[in-house]
Length: 73
Image 1 (tube, rainbow, N blue to C red):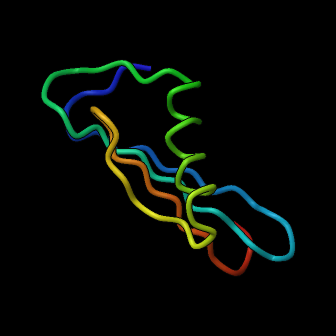
Image 2 (spheres, rainbow, N blue to C red; image 1 turned 90 degrees about the horizontal axis):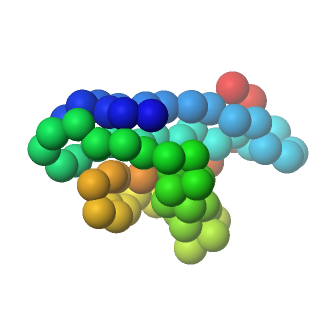
């Protein structure tokens, strides 16, 4: 979808063995931008694959963060 400057999206998903993943995406560039499903999944997946403890990284117009924790959503 389209997101204005500084817009934030969050989602919680349950994983295996009493683990949840808190997902966070923030639009960090000026003006309204489009974020497609594939681009969003790719950015979030990099945080999971690159570190099992999650992480936060900026790619282009977006800041992606994944925070795994004990417990379910």
